[in-house]
Image (cartoon, rainbow, N blue to C red; front, side, top):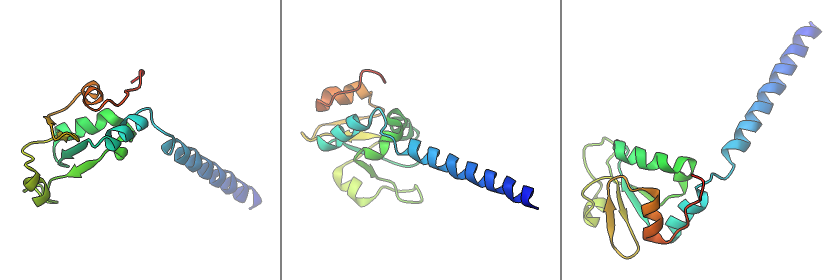
Length: 126
């Protein structure tokens, strides 16, 4: 009986250790965190819709750093209409980036273009 408990103990410790390793990796800063934060600080707003494949591609360019972007969801939960806020802002397609000066870029925008538009520094190793 004690051998069985020892095995359970080892397995439990291993699972707990793996959980903590996974959590520490998930909380590590990503290489684009500073860039995404700079975009937000400089007033860049990313308008999109959850069902939009181009929006998903744009988010994927940022990896885990996408959580730091100033993202505005424009779609209703059923995906059938646009939220009034986005209609009032005149958002006509997704993704749309709006900048502090009021200018906009539509479609998947290269990170280099976002850097040029905002003056944010893009890390050398992407």
